[in-house]
Structures are given as C-alpha cells and as structure tokens.
Length: 95
Image 1 (cartoon, one colour):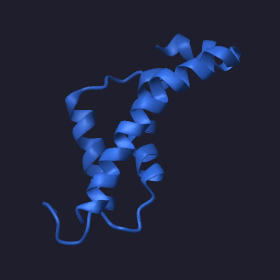
Image 2 (cartoon, one colour):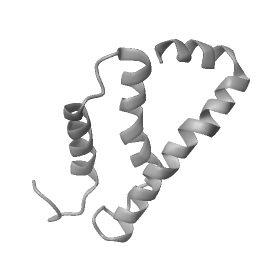
Image 3 (spheres, helix red, strand yellow):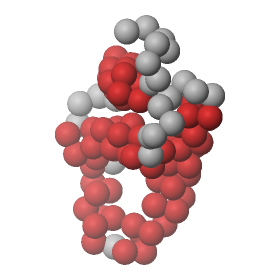
C-alpha cells in the first residue's frame, strides 16, 4: 500500500480512479454515519460532516500509506474515542 502513494502522485488517471472507486465510497459511508448521529441528536448539530469524516479517515490512511504502524483494533478504538469525545452532545455516552 505504501508504494501506491508514489504511483497515485505520479499518475493523475490512477489518482482519479483510486479516489472514485475507493476513497469517495468510504467517505460517503462515513459521512452518512456522521449525518445520522447528528440527526439523532447523538452528535453536536454544529458539526461539519465532511470535517468529522476527515478526522476519522485521515489517520487511517496516514498509517496505511505512510507511517506503517498496524491498523489494529486498539488503534481503531482510540481513534473513534478521540473523535467522538469532540463530537458528541453533552451528556451522551460515557465520559
């Protein structure tokens, strides 16, 4: 996966295809979850769903493509907890 970064950077057609077939689909799925959380009152109404999507996905792609530490369950739990702590409505969920 790390080698893909160089290829995507050097090949605009590959970059476009990767964004359309992989990145944009994942972004849409995550954005939908964020929008549902906002609609249900579980997350603050002033949140920008695109920004929250970035906050969740960028660390994953950074690890996957650049830094190399594993994408394990513990990392996932820590990432989600950090983002949720910022995004949730007061009084919702564990502190």
